[in-house]
Length: 334
Ligand code: KG4
Ligand code: ZN
Image (cartoon, rainbow, N blue to C red; front, side):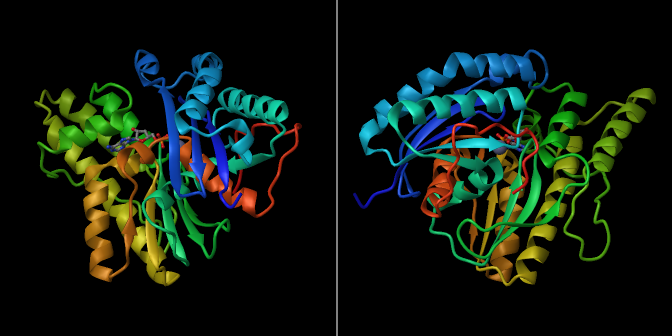
């Protein structure tokens, strides 16, 4: 058996997902049950509600992933599961589901860090080349990661406050847009012009860290001030200006990082990499510098289990194993 066949399980936030991946590069199946419609009513993810829906969905989704893959339990090499970071109640459902399946089928269990999953979503597009710089931008993360080889991760920049996606969601909420706000802002910005000069947090010469809470407050204050003065708000221009500010900082810092480590590739992953402005500006900047850029297709940008299986494949081949005492970790470091 030359192939490495891994079942991946992901439940760190609001998607219950399972997928079977061959050799870390071929998606045999990819099942996702999204809870977005459920959480939209509350304007954001409610952790307790998320856990309950994961419990409802986990068995169904794992069975669906196995069935659609055409792979039998006997042909699996291991089960990979997101150990963290994420919502603890949500993580526990995936971890316990994975433990039960591993025990029942006599399979090894491989713990996966969620961020490394987002990074490995790119391997479905193209083989990774090292050294590389990966920007992981989602609702919970804004991280620049330097990789010198498979399975080795060095975080060289991170947010000091809000994640980029969090800023998108909060600004959207202030504009009266539904959750999740990122795609709404993206759509709205297409009809606007970046006329408002919102701040960019550079945090000092050469810093690779991020900060989005100042920008978020600036946008919210701007909206409140304009409303108080009785001015008509131009929502599209606000969205476009905010988006430009976020994208400019993300792109510049990623390029500084890539040049610093002489990156052979730049990867972008996580929910915010679905943003059309971030994608187009990142493409322009990478092309100018002659550095190949990979951004996964939209369905692999947001949370899924194929990416967990892909990262888990590397962990598996490196001999990473967990026993049945494995626990979810809300704050897990790479
Ligand atoms: O990776 P993801 O699905 O879950 C986390 O691990 O957080 O990312 C979700 C985040 C949300 O904040 C959402 O608003 C944002 O990604 N997002 C976007 C876009 N699509 C999703 N942000 C900006 N533009 C988009 N098109
Ligand atoms: Zn994620």
